[in-house]
Image (tube, rainbow, N blue to C red):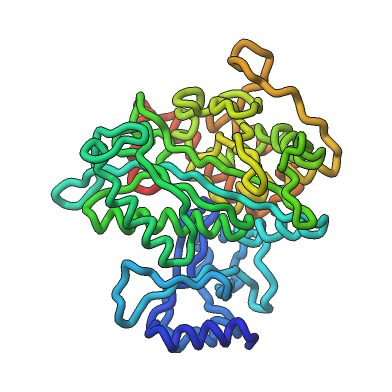
Length: 432
């Protein structure tokens, strides 16, 4: 057992931890967990904890081979909403074969490989997230309704904003867990909220986003509410976006720092993402409902970039020093962040390797130009990904087969339904 594992065991003993949640994600990014007692943690470090992987979406490809959860010592967090006595701790896990080698189709392994590719070239990718969600009232049985918790709009305060105490509880819980929320506010839609995170390395940022969504759901439920991350839960209202602030460092220097302009590597990184965005949209916007969000309330429709213009796919915010970055505005919170971040990182690194020049910025209405459109529905996005050499190169076959089969089934169900929004509400509203 290594020193890190020994330190975790000491922490468990000194902090009255009795239950360990071994957290992992299925192929959609939904968090799962197996809970073990504290005395089983040494075995988890040394051998891993086996689980019924064929019952987890995306892990069916392991066949009859046993898979094991191996805790990552750097991810310990006490769950602050659980009892203070005999406490509950959560750790993210890597999924491994019996011999300890990583299971290649696990989402976290896919992102780890992308991070390692960047590191081999001297790059560190940092990602900060802005994640939006709606708070809805629940009925007498505690089931979600589509009645927003309040009628506030962007940056409103009490009494229009009824979510300020909920956001406060969320931010304090995240802080107790070692995460770093930077700001929060009411968003445009009724009952819609946003919490923004300080940037972190790509793997930590993905772990943090999964943690954030679980915290939001838990705090909302404690307050008799339901938190929805569905991209477009209310017709005619703002959708839930996941804006990604991405920067790249090499040799301790932020390559997005503009003195007087960004480095060539930063511009090639942006162009690499622009080149591949259509092929990976099905991983950034995975639901049929995702495409209802595009083209309204500043959600992009075109493959364009600009300085500061919030309606473009990529914008370069006004900032300085270490805060310089690009902002990708198309993803939504229902994506699997491990797969999404991995593909974005690979696309950007391809752009650097190929020395791609950055296309001209678009500072007008892109509809008046010859700019390319993002895929306009799940079917188009799925077809682009299935025919993509890039996706085939960087995602293991097992991931592609499982993910594409899942999306084909959803697209088929959507097209066969008489009321597509009702079908989405039935299949997704109380699940994402």
